[in-house]
Figure 1 (cartoon, rainbow, N blue to C red):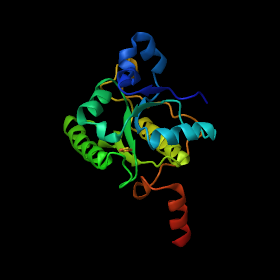
Figure 2: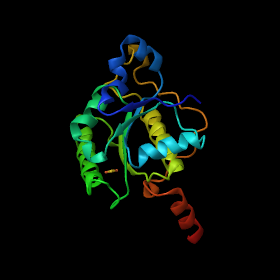
Figure 3: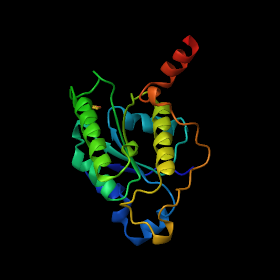
Figure 4: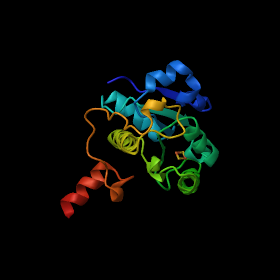
Length: 201
Ligand code: FES
């Protein structure tokens, strides 16, 4: 599987396909585009670790490194959708672990606000999610990436994306070897936590 593309803040705009010109759009035709805003102290490190551990996750995920998820605001999230992302997720430190005290709390509120706005403009709020991903949780990052790719595929192309007329309304191609979706109650939990809970149940 190809190495996922990575972008550094503030070059986030380069992660968005519509700004790549016609050749970029052609290359992405029929495939989902997922943008991940990853905190440099946790999720971005986890993504790096996932690469080092050779854990695979869809190459469709474009990672944008941010100094803290507190840097995320609703305009940045809407910008991603406006420029063609089929799904977007924000991955930040666990509650209480943010290096800037409450950046992740702020980001969660922005994500919730943006989800309400997406619903109002007719886009599915499930296209946007927030995850807590500690630096050591490489497999959790890979899970989140797969989950959002799967959602993008089942929801279909973002109607704002420059899609050829003949492809409108068609499903996006699901990358191979995607595991089952994470149940909603397990979103944001470490894999080990989930395994322990299942054992205890
Ligand atoms: Fe990671 Fe704030 S430093 S979310």
